[in-house]
Image (cartoon, rainbow, N blue to C red; front, top):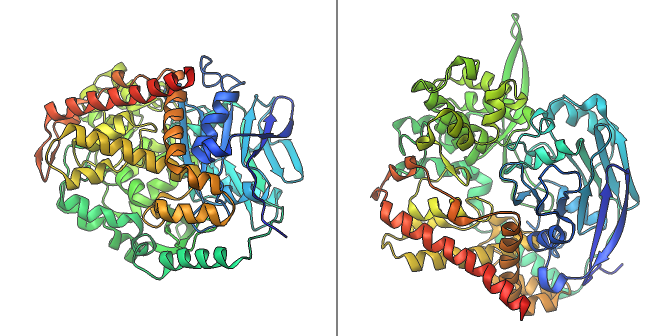
Length: 589
């Protein structure tokens, strides 16, 4: 059987209100590649820029890339939607089995529109689809619904289960989509979009069979990439301690946020290093489908349920960002307490990064008397893990007006209650890198408000010349190279392996020579198309601000240079607008 190489996209569209769907083919492979580029193209075709994020006609899009299934670590899926967080076009990326499941369901993308009449589960495969009534799962947490769905939809291999928790059901802008238990479409509220559509879960059965190119060129290239990933030290960090290895060095260089970014270093780091988590809590490593690395680190928590020393054990995945957001950012330094908080967050279906940073703001606001127990229900104090466990329960459920407003973002809550100066929001709640001006600007204005849009945090560590043009050029060029990777859709941990030269070989070897010939122009087109898509939904980089707390940060290089920060921000915003202007002028000509 020969491999399936096609210049068109095979896309399934599903209308939940009708309970029906269809498959169509679309052109565009040579210009948008797949993944991020395909998602933007599909939103331009099916999205409604002027309608609200929760309008039933708005699409929820899942897209994979041309190399999915062919090479290791081509394991991500891009989810695109109009975000409940800012009502603008957004992307979120996740691993797990979803990409491989879509590939073996013979699809390049899945588009979901409409709103189900009752809470529903969409199940699909290469043979068709079904929209099932699962009202009895509404209200259940992510763990409980996962157990039920695994019983309902048997099978192994390329089966992926995506579901939401209570946070998604209430349409929280911080709700994530849980993917195969340990991975997530985490940021900007994709889970809230599912909740607005009355969609509790999506089950993708990858039941088709495809051949692989048996030629010597493909086999040799695959083996060479596999060996780079497994027989060298290039990926050792991710398999060994995982990204939790970043905690200690960032603390040493005064770049690790502590207690709502009041500090950037603390001697208590010895309690929450990657080594401590591995030595004390680690049970096993796991990997996404098609990945030999195993960067998913799963620890354990136990809970006593009877006086006679009877315990329940639960497994909880961790890495750097969750440990930062519910550990150092909240002043919690016991690894098992961090995992216990993460367990509550996972059950509720909240984005742990935004949730932790938002509660850090709430804790400081509580300290300053801006809010009280009337709002928080439980008294908040940095380091009080038990209080945070209860607070996250209310946060995920949206128990009262305060937690529902906090779920819309720390900045919105601060505008209402006060305390805007110390809301650690860079477009959305910050990632865990207090490295300096370049990163703060990159996350604030970046397309996804994500630390992975570009290596701004790395640039800060390598440059101290305050050259605005050089920094902005780096951010835009790095974004352009990354957007081609996310259109493949590659795990960004493998960006040092999948260089342009290697990607060129991969594409040619499996039959996508035209893409290989035009990688630079395609990546440039995708970069501009994404920005144009977002701006069409209301994004204006000039209106993004950086709160005062970030201007007070002290790193190993000293205090933040506010003048440089503002100059960098203004120039970056100007260049982003220029990308879209160039695109529009080319289209008109």
